[in-house]
Length: 130
Image (cartoon, rainbow, N blue to C red; front, side, top):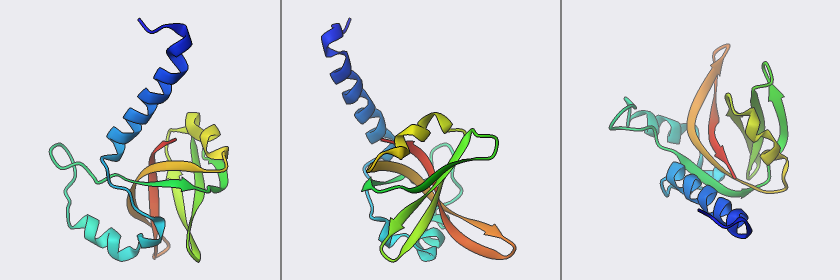
């Protein structure tokens, strides 16, 4: 049993622990994310049991233009990466949308690409927000 006066501290420590589990210790700066990195990650496939897709994290990011998308259960934002922005999307995670309204956030994500009308672009698939 956790005393009520320690509950906030416990929840913060627990959330930090869960975030670190999802992260797996792979912190990177958004500036190094590129189509070449996406190709290199694809070489590690197939992903699944015994070979999970790599999850990375970037800390103290300033989220830009966060907005709900689709039926309102997903959200999208832009992540600054030097002289460009990377698109980040969270599917089925609208309950975390209020977290990206902050000045700075920590993001855990996988890196992939989307293709639309023959144009490929790097996209971050958000796994957690802190």
